[in-house]
Image 1: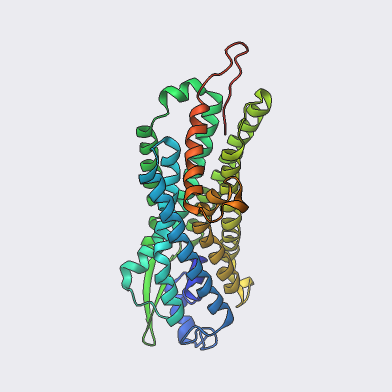
Image 2 (image 1 turned 135 degrees about the horizontal axis):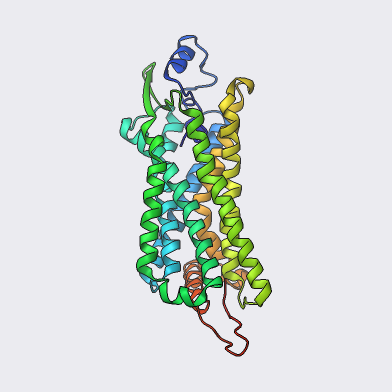
Length: 345
């Protein structure tokens, strides 16, 4: 929840320098039209409704994935990846009620720590999600290119260690979101905002490079290698795991790309007028929607969707379980005569 994501808060906390914000309030530039006592504008009401939907679907869907991947089916490397992804999304969805309350009453009532933590959790989710997608892409690439090595060294223990490393890196990169959040008191209201001082450009560029550009290039490289290998050896018996990963990655980039674009444009706010906050509102809500989409992708990729919509839980379990079995088959050599490999990616 940085400057752009602060659109959740009806966009009254998007100042980046403390003194600039004080000056704006003292000049009366923040009027009742831009900062109403309650959520009355259409954009505000729609944002609240969307956030409620995202919260309900995200908690339910990701909670189901956590239950199935963590407790109901046999643990594997693949379930470790998807469990981490679901935990990340679940954590983010759990902070949405704070944002909803703040938007409705136009006042931050949860104190400084939660002001900082909600921002931290937002970017922890962003970084951990994209890093796990990178890990899954690299894992698939290694499984196809070096199946024998993968069969001998691809273990749950090592996968868990990788997940821990991903979360540590994500936490470190999310520290600015915690460090620069402050509360400003104005007219009996508390405003949770970002006081970036002179670090705004640095923070935004780091987020774009580490949270989007490098991951995008890394995943593209992995997929290029993967596709070339599959076409050369005609390896794929099942395309479902490949489709699932493609959808996960595509939805992540579609949800987050507008947010990063707006964040970069926002570096020079003076050229974009007072309606720029609406772009923040839209891209922030779009970014948050990614947190409830993933578990539904698992379900919708199952076979006979139209006939089995009622069996949501079993389809999620079936998809994740197929991921495990397909990856296991990917480490086996099935045709020793011509040394062709049979795998599913």
